[in-house]
Amino acid sequence: MHNFHFFGFEPDEELRTYAEQRLDRLLDLSPYGSVAVALLEKTEHGFRCVVSVYTKHGPFIAESTQYLADEALVHVMKTLTSKIENWREARTRYIRGRPLPPILEPVA
Image (cartoon, rainbow, N blue to C red):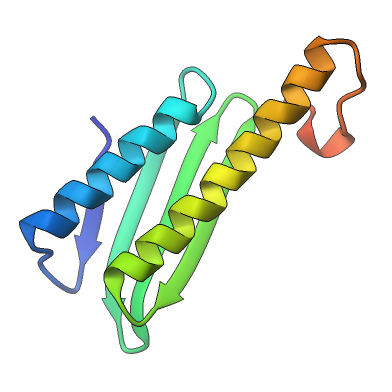
């Protein structure tokens, strides 16, 4: 299981569970064999969330600082979901014989 790491505060059980479930769902969308590093920390400007998903096709990374912890988490997860879905669309086009944009080529 991939866990969120919380710094500067102790999340309630609801936030902890929500964060871990969102991360699990994100990894279900990710390329096979992906691993994630996830951080949610309290800062003087609010809550900073950083999630990095590492794959053999390259990393998918998003970061957000928001006033509320759940807002930072949702923003990051939406951004990463969009990035991964765009990668999947491009990969599907490539598999069907259409050229893959250079930014989405596999990492050697």
